[in-house]
Image 1 (cartoon, rainbow, N blue to C red):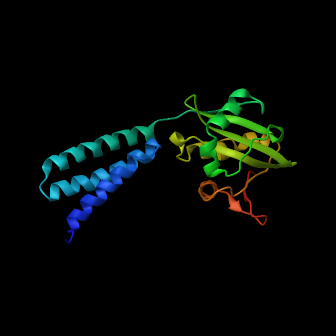
Image 2: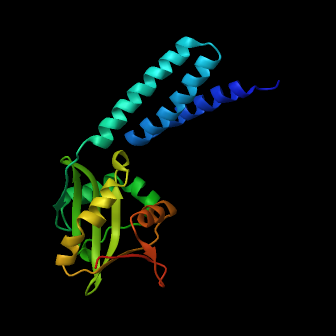
Image 3: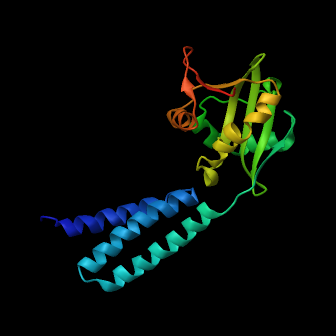
Length: 207
């Protein structure tokens, strides 16, 4: 049986909405769900299924409302510096270890390496953790830059590598480098201005 173009739109819209339900990030959920709802609303109106069109128009409005709130809300970012042997830090790393391994395969926490250790707070909620150590007099190597799923929208990265730039410089660092631990993490760093160097690492100048 041949499937018409309109039926394809309905199937695709259903798949997109189903996919949005699998997103752990609320931003990704809203964006993907918005696109699916637009398609479904269009599909409903075109085939004359007005309740389907109206329901999905309502969903579009809800998604737009919440996305506007997310992107227009002024969020407060702070850091909470901790000692390398901090018990909450160790528990946090243990609790999120399975997810951490997806982005940093083989990561094994070594407290003795730490030069810089802090939690990233977003409106006072722990959004991620940053661990790094000094390898040369003025080079900081990132060991872990992990963000929990709910906050993966690059705002944490911009805060760490752009807003905290002066803090790193005051500590004597002129460059930050990181290993290519995974494709996703490599893509994330390149979007934040990191570039590959001759050693196969990703680096970003602070000065």
